[in-house]
Image 1 (spheres, helix red, strand yellow):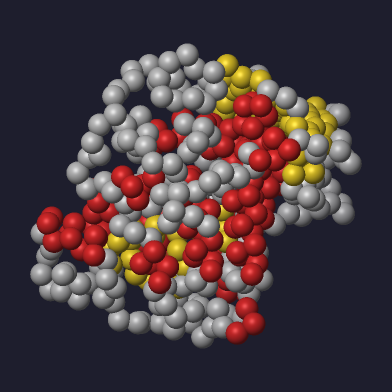
Image 2: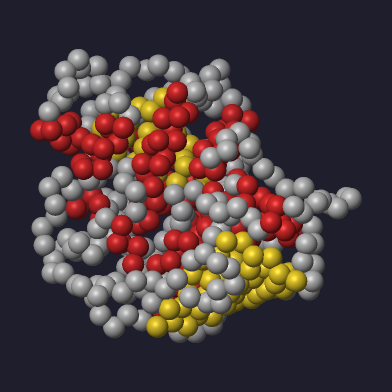
Length: 445
């Protein structure tokens, strides 16, 4: 087997064998934990990290960590993916150093790894996060945090029980656009906000269905499915098209909604408003494998203070770009294109002057790149020992709950009354049974 210390360049066959066997071969370069006793920083600030999931956004995370590695802040010890094609690309990108794995459980078992970056498909987020927390590792996990409410609760519990920092990848809370907008809204740029609307393009329709077939070479289909029920491979599931299947992806509301709702809750200072009602309507596709509603409207009502949140798909396109939000206040409106990460805030928010006695809002500005900045905030929470990054798992869970209950209200076709304290739908046993779902052994919580 090829180890990271081998002077020879592995062949393709050797690489595939290595990813399947996945036995750690690196010497320990730093202490096994960055955090010392009682949550205090250890003697070194150099984190040993591993990547779980290296397709799509996973490669953005790999490249970010390479920059941190060049700054001497981290060492990338391993990369992992159930698809050897993604895995080989990642391994080449990190300079053919470190270890390669198909199965994330090898990473969980390693004592020298301090933190993991999880960018697997949505249905894997909760299981891998909980297992990483239980092994004492800090976690950066892509949004949405979870695909069910009960998964999100398990993630929060695992983070708290094991005293680790879990940052969810909704980057707008550490990006300049989100900061400008939050600062302006909280300080009254449009007066009291009574309604926030989102617009977003519809979910796609599977216009060209294909039959089930054999997985491509290098893909461990059983491992890719993980917690999901066993089903045949289909190109309409893999790789990124899992997004359009309710069971695994949840559509745009669970994907982009995780970004947009996070920014909105932040700007509205509403992270504590965990109870609400939700109603949803939508148009189901009439063909193909993808089952997310093509068009969709979801209305959330909050109390004390009272305000309304509307997810429109496509909704009322107030701005110029393909999706965004609008804050409707007593004294006007403020538009935020996208979610405050990839696009700047509107000029009126950027130029807003904080009034005397105004409320300043949190911002980490260690990096101009907002993806880097979000990870820097995560590292900061670990170094300082408070273990509460900007999008702490509890915030990510509450945001995902909005998304997941929106889909649930659509599926059930009725209004749901959500009790955030009890984490249940009021007087609706059938809805409460759908707050969790079975997970396939051994890929389960």
